[in-house]
Length: 267
Image (spheres, rainbow, N blue to C red):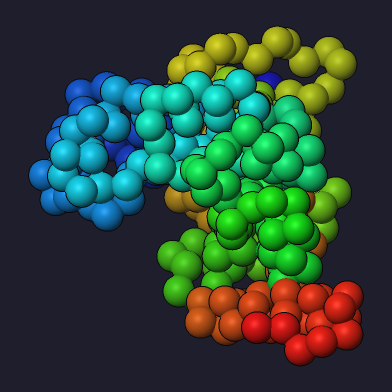
């Protein structure tokens, strides 16, 4: 057992067990009610179509962004009336589809018409931003880039692991939630990837199975056990910077790319 092999402790309290938001439909519905009541400027949907909420959101002046991993998903959500499509490639952190960023972005851009497409998946530098614009995207969606920022509330242990990681330190695994998910390698993912490991359970059962491990690792700040969702662009995160600097660095890098390509000052 993983618990015995790696001396995984018990979580510190039964009330503090790692909670997956997707396990409680009642809480999710209440959260949606609050979002609509507060008229949040943007509602972003992943792991499912936001078609059910589009009409109510638009009546309140809200914009709906749909995050997708396959072109057929993008087509359905565009037809449903989303305002923006986020085309997320296999390079991305967390739950993501099987198609690479360089393939999914131009595919979706080709069918999107007037709906803006935002590129996601492994985006951590100005070079990635420049490439995304060349692929037909209107901009980029970044996630891993912010996890080691000064403003991030991540544990310092996680920030240090992200800064030290390369793309090879991420793994695409169903072992955490039951869905394919890119995270930093850890004992949990490594043991589940072995040939003699049992099959992962479907969601939400795999989530329930991994919860004690995740919570115990975090509660006891066990650096050897802890992990975080991380995309393949993590190798370019080499320092803990303020969010403001992250933005300006990315823009300056992208402008430099275009200047080098065209021989003219960009922007």
